[in-house]
Image (cartoon, rainbow, N blue to C red):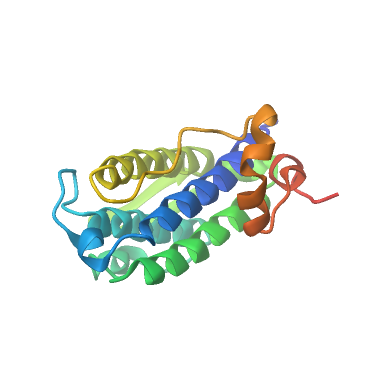
Amino acid sequence: MQINILPYRAMAHNNRWANHRLLAACAALSPAEFTAPRIGFFPSLAATLNHILIVDRFYVDAMEGGRLRPAAWSEPEPCKTVAALREAQEEVDRRLIAVVESLEAGGLDRIIELRRRSGVQRERMDRLLLHLFQHQVHHRGQAHAMLSGTSVRPPQLDEFFLAEEATLRAAEIAELGWTEERVWRGSDR
């Protein structure tokens, strides 16, 4: 069975775009607002966004064949500022896009080894990618809700690259160095 990688490519780019929007909004927060206690699975925006980063690093490293292993969780909040978090998240988002763009259809069947404290978990690449995208959406939603209790208006995150709305995101897509063609076809041609 031939599997199309286009939806995975689009999800990886949409993930990067959503993180770009959310962290740009968080950059307008004071340090106190960023770390203030809030209601959510994690107790602050800083903790929630650092959790996304840590999990992304763990899974992307495994997809790349790396050796990060449980050391990914050695520091619960590796980034103390929005600026540091933004830079680190951009880096792992670019790596995730590169992983997806390097896939051939057969690569989605590849087994990825996740080296956890309890042992090695083996998962297919396609399932792991979908799991990671779901994790990101889940926690970004929590961060979005937390942001609505601050002085900064939360950005719209519930869009998915609709063709008729391309002009509404054109400036951000350009900031990211992309074109719509790249997102949907894997090239800028």
